[in-house]
Length: 348
Image (cartoon, rainbow, N blue to C red):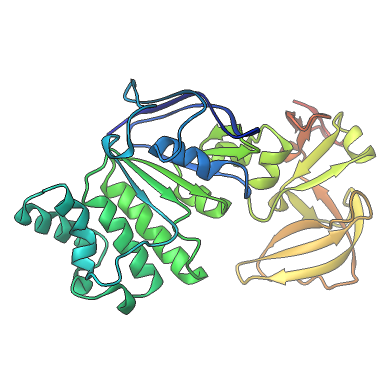
């Protein structure tokens, strides 16, 4: 178990500053997810924690011990990459035990560790197979098992599911969640650009944008209380609806945001628009309504069950007032609306 502290960590490649003063504390045994769009610096930040890149300034500490100058092998970390990096000529057992062999761990101890990890990851029937005989999800589990047997203080995952198809991503994501519960004393840091992975796996999420930490919080904190337009638009699927102009100024804001589940199609709705598309997903539906304002992006309304609204139909929609998020000219959150009877509400 290890607590990590990052204090004003910066990383530059030549004249380009990639990480711009990241500070945070990752608690012992916590599952922290770094999330953000491509190029935001999340993988670079993970490599700084691992010691694979040298920081330009600031400090990284494990349990209050600064590790800036400590080589990766001395940090007590194990890393899982998006490419499985398995030795094709070795069996699953040998791939998982090879690092222990280099560390001169006894043969019996190697066997016990590999068998324990294989059972945990449901790999026991495949220990004598070669990587070419495995599916993508099984190969990724072997890569995870290779990390487990080292008994690391900190697990680092760098987009481990990005090479898998949709079904295998869900299956392997569940395996990683189970792994976290069974190894609750091990701190885990997970990098992804997929906010669904972040929401379903994390104890807390760190949202990065252009090398800056935008917000850190639990998945629900970020979903329900985003501190910026960027976080509000990045966290949640489908993304939050945004409106500006007169509709926002009526609510004393530069921009307002409403999630799909907080909009209703009603007879006397506040806004009128045309249905441009309707997606029926079984348990719920998404109705896309063009109300003729903003950048032309339709409003997304979530309905329970199968929607009966067809393309071309004119409908009226209204937000649930207390769920309207308000943002200032800099895109920072300035609070929600409080409902009042017969009106549009007032700022909380």
